[in-house]
Image (cartoon, rainbow, N blue to C red; front, top):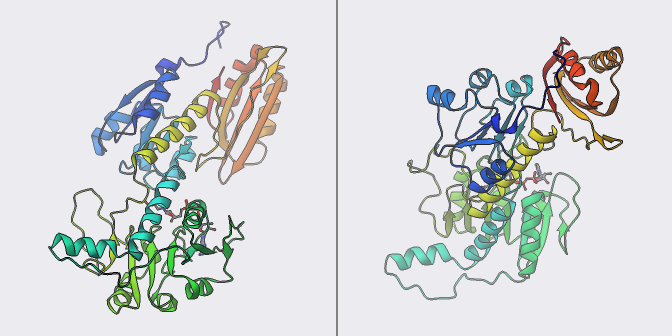
Length: 415
Ligand code: NAI
């Protein structure tokens, strides 16, 4: 190391590439921080993708760009990935983690949008809106109150009382519905909602059943033929969660027979990969069935909220090393340390999670006579991540020493 003081990598030289037309509000936040941002509208693949992201420090994608292990390994300067969407399936998380590259997403920014779609469907199903609208489009004036109901006083059964389920609960109660819910974990009932003792109990009392569970072994086929058969005569089923949760063949039969009075389905076992592709499903043409193309979370407001949330997570990581919200590396957030008004220099280190690594860092610090003012280490799976604030005088040497330790994956310094 030369005697001259090196400075933190200039922000303007940090290249952020945002693909797939992420909402401009997140872009503006990143630009305001002084990073150099390049935006592109579409999803890319192959050589074009590598051309765009190969030299980037930060890459932002939505759900279509596949950041496979092969692609990631060729991005040598990559420091972080932002998924400007709820899921992270499009990124090889293991490879990213093994490179010391945190992957951030925005799982809850569209919660309200899904809840609002669900509420609109609860009313629309009770009033047979989709059926009446379809008839009228064909010129048939079906004016009658038959099989139409107010939702006030009706029982809504919510399966999965997490972020979305609990929002639906609050909104439904404000319309005068009685809410029962079933969750596999113990949950605090909001408002006047009641926890059902079992899913079967919920099905037997609900006028409308709305699913808000994740896709797991236990929820695959959750609403099978037998459980659909346990629903009340004339009840409605809403699935805005995951396509695998409902046996659609059985639902179609129950709707056709009139036992189930209608359904709303936003998610399907097999969905087209792209907008504009054709779609064939057993529920098509069924009476009083609302079909939507997986748009529960798709609103302009959600897009904006997702973009801001993902951008803020990337900014906090680039500026402070904070990995809160990362899905593939330990979450660490160390407050800034100041000693007698002098801000410490911050060293970020991803390393293999094997015993003794922290000891080696401390040995290096004491060998160099560098004071550590603050430190936070966490490990998860194969990866350890430590954020360490050191006295400015010796921080550069300590960073170099940490980088040289065999288990280190990636070391960076900020100040
Ligand atoms: P969350 O994780 O906050 O809540 C899920 C709840 O389901 C948790 O309380 C969990 O304990 C419960 N649960 C898990 N397994 C269960 C089981 N076997 N039985 C009963 N309860 C169970 O998730 P969040 O954000 O509320 O999302 C819920 C669903 O909505 C997810 O499947 C998500 O993928 C889907 N979603 C759909 C969107 C769309 O566009 N249609 C957009 C956003 C989310």
